Structures are given as C-alpha cells and as structure tokens.
Image 1 (cartoon, rainbow, N blue to C red):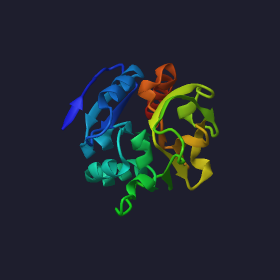
Image 2: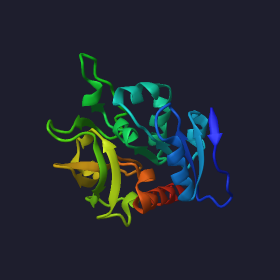
Image 3: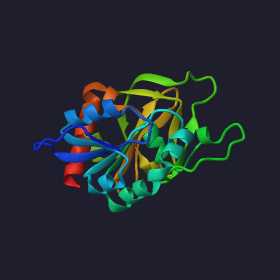
Length: 220
C-alpha cells in the first residue's frame, strides 16, 4: 500500500517513509513536507528505488521492529548499497545497528538488525530513570551534512536503549543523560545515518535537521 501525501513541483526531493506497521508516520511526513520534500508512505520496494531518500521511522521494541520490517529487509540493504540516503529515526536508528540487548531477553534468541552501522543497542544503567524522556543537548563530534547548524541545540528524546557503535567514528553527535551516548550515528561514507531523538518533535532544531536531510537527498 502506498500513500502519497504531497505532490508539489516545488519539492526539493522525493522521500519515501517506510510503512512497516510501526512509527509516527504522519508526524514524520508532516515534518518532511515542511522541510521541502515530496513524501510517499509505502512499503513498495520499487518506490524505494525511485526515491531520492528513504526514512525508516519507528516507535517500540527492537524485536518487533525487525520482525515487522523483515519483508523489506533486503530492499533496505539495497537502498544502502546504492548510496541513496537512508535515515533511521528512534527505533529506526537502532534497527540500523547489528543487535540490541532488547532483542535478547527472557530466553529469546538474539535478533539481527540491519548491520549497516555495526554495533549494539544497550539499556541505560540500572538506577537511571527510563525511558529517557525530554529535551537534551546535541554535541557535534563529527562533520556530517545532517548536523549543519545544530551544535549545542536541544532535541526531544523518548527511549530506554541507546546505540553503541563498534567504531567510535560512527558517532556524529553525543548527548549526556547521566552518561554520554551517541544520539546521531552514521556509516563511514555518511549515506546511512540515524537520530535517537525525534526530529519531527524537536521544534526548530528538528526542522533544521529534516531540511538538512532533504538537502542531502536533493544533492545525492
């Protein structure tokens, strides 16, 4: 099923928001439209291939996300291989990694993420208030076009797990919540990336990030 939410000749780029049954599809879409994108909500792989950029949103548990997206797993890997920008948001960012502590509990076997950014997602330490919910500062650690103009700005988080990339160079921004963690990550060539926070809920900072993403798509 595909839903085209905008079709403007003035759009800077065409973006697909992946519909796999989880995620704030409408709010993400509205944010992208404000940022200048023509947006299609779909799980159609042909649309992935035709788009200037692909967004993998997500709210919920790692296992559920990976299992729900299994039917488009290979297609997402092909998006990444093609160099088309792939942007994971919240759970979608965590799904870009290899594994998660959240997918290996109560005797269940571990769930394999997309492994586009090698690493694991770990739970905040015992005694920390979870979920981490609210506004926290972004500190840029690595140059990337997604973070132009946002160093020191605040974004809105809701999560209980955070990414620990195998390679520290994958960390684009960090955020402090009783410990420093990676709040934006990216692969080596910068075409696969994700935010632990919700840009669509992060006011002007989030809109700037979405505009940066649309610019990346337009120039890819």
